[in-house]
Amino acid sequence: QLQLQESGPGLVKPSETLSLTCTVSGGSISSSSYYWGWIRQPPGKGLEWIGSIYYSGSTYYNPSLKSRVTISVDTSKNQFSLKLSSVTAADTAVYYCARREFTTVTSPPGFDYWGQGTLVTVSS
Amino acid sequence: SYVLTQPPSVSVAPGKTARITCGGNNIGSKSVHWYQQKPGQAPVLVIYYDSDRPSGIPERFSGSNSGNTATLTISRVEAGDEADYYCQVWDSSSDNYVFGTGTKVTVL
Image (cartoon, rainbow over all chains, first blue to last red; front, side):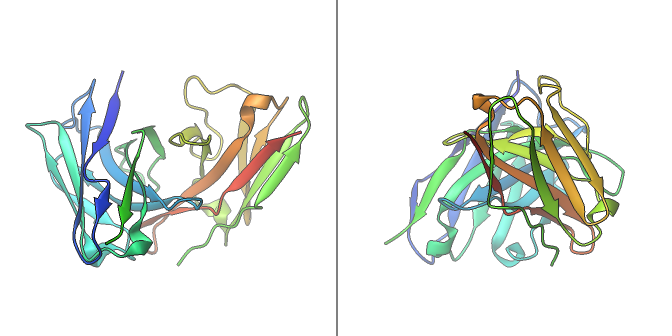
């Protein structure tokens, strides 16, 4: 059974960089069949897609966050990572990693596997 | 940017049918995915590509999409269906996944 697990600091200071890692088990991140993504949810609010990455390193990001986001993949560790720079209190959220199937059609599918999420608080 | 609007809340009695709408400009031309999220848990995909159900999702969950409105229908509602529900589309004009505002379903 595929499992995704987020890890990283739960507290980040304003203006610093938030760094999280998602470890995939029960499946290979190097599969050509999937994209891997990050989604976040501020406390009591809705979901926001941050960005996604393919095993080859190809990425695409939410335009509203693109200038601050970097997503990378480490196939040797079966992990992918998120870096979000210059954080503010507005970046306080539960951060989820998730998987969606690769497709060549113009409308990609939804995310079918999710991690349990990790709360990151931005505060001094 | 593309906006998806959902009613904040829907209340339904056990055994009845709940309908959750997701409004967007010409959403019928897009593919809609639906997620269920229970308190303290990650979202679960319940409908993809407008009306397909992942394995393990009860047939009570169904979806439709036409014009400016997509709808998630939960038939024979059970207490365990109480959750927040989100719609999602891919907006090709901005290369962005967009989520709806979310609907809290309360089982009376």
